[in-house]
Amino acid sequence: MSATNSRIQKLLRILGQKKNATKMGSPQKEFTKLQIGVKPEMDALKEDLRLLKTVGLLVLKDSCFEDKLPFEQSESFRKTAAKFSKIYHTYDTIWSYRKTKTIGVHQRLTEQLNSFTEEVNREIDCHLTTNEIKRILNLINSWYAYQIDQRFFRKATLSYSVEHYMFLFHFLPKINPTVYFCECCEEIFPNEARYKKHVQSVHAVHAFTCSECGKSFKRLYFYDKHLKTVHLKP
Ligand SMILES: [Zn+2]
Ligand SMILES: [Zn+2]
Image (tube, rainbow, N blue to C red; front, side, top):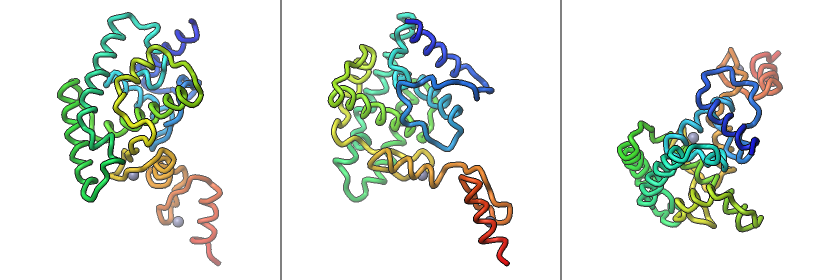
């Protein structure tokens, strides 16, 4: 009981937090999979929580988040999430992309993502960008696949809250999940591993930037090697 309480406290604290977040533990032990992006981990988590709160889907980061909320508050999350999933359901070009893949569909996908974003903003009264919507869809995708795995392959009992929210997305493909969207460019990926690899190699901010040529590197070792081989040639 107190474990849940402290988890929700942490989540809410993160949401309200401005900075100085380096010493936090891992508040979403439950579900840490899609923790990758162009921002430092803590900022990315805060950003995810903000997005998920907007569409009523905090459950994605904490399956017990409802337990300690007043009834009206969890009802309001459920209502927003229901609106969101209802709109998402009508955009089958997006969530069944793998089934309908034909020539020209990529263009159509972009159009659909844009109008989906507009409709969500109008219906839920928020101001999400298409890239933020892509992030939300990626988070849903990853969470959904994880829960399906838990339920069908590990025979785990999902919490009442998770079951409720899973049902909102009953239309999502269970075997071949939908695609992952890069939140920084137009690329799409058939699975999470490829998506992560792309983000890491193309969009991640690397720690070491060469002052001579502007190339950047993840590790000092590679930067060092680059300096020696490219700029310090005898
Ligand atoms: Zn990209
Ligand atoms: Zn260089």
